[in-house]
Length: 97
Image 1 (spheres, rainbow, N blue to C red):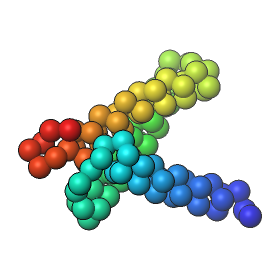
Image 2: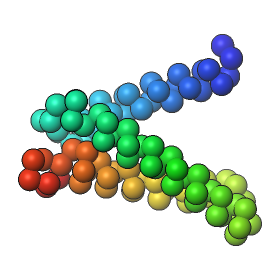
Image 3: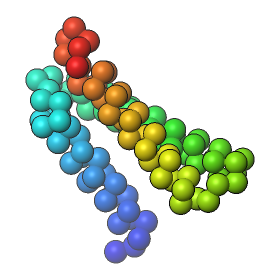
């Protein structure tokens, strides 16, 4: 399979598995998928943009090695994604996680 196509398929499959695990096991959400999926994708998309911005700043402006920059970006985006999904995507009707 062409590497770019395989990467896209892997990313979509990973996002779907991540969503389902987050919905059912991490956050034990009772909300309908029609309420949570678009929020989950929004948090993920913003996380991807945050990752790109951090990488740009650390590699291009600060001159950090790309591997160390990616480790830092991954850690920051991990927290962004978790907190965004906990307090927005999968929060209960009162806004509590």
